[in-house]
Image (cartoon, helix red, strand yellow):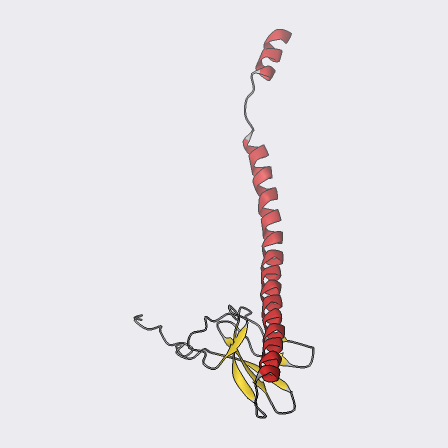
Length: 150
């Protein structure tokens, strides 16, 4: 009799339904906790990328201003792929990523840059102003892209 009980116990294979349900419940709780944390980290990375683009645009604009032989202002658009200031934004791929407004130095707040490019202006005193704008040729907000149908 003892031998038959031992044989039954040793031949048990797999997990019970209760054990599987406990594992699934634990996994669901871990996922429910981690998804919002992960999403906030992604938005933080997007803001950091946009802030880095703002700093790079300012440096490129000042370089352009100092190397240009003009006494007027330098106005253009920052091309993040090439790292230069260009006169027209039509060939620039939008690089703004953040869906929320961001502040570059704690004092200047920029509107939500998602899908936009930086317009940069350096005045005769060397003051740099920047604004996130839709690139030339981009569809207006809410308008379908070229060739798209609603």
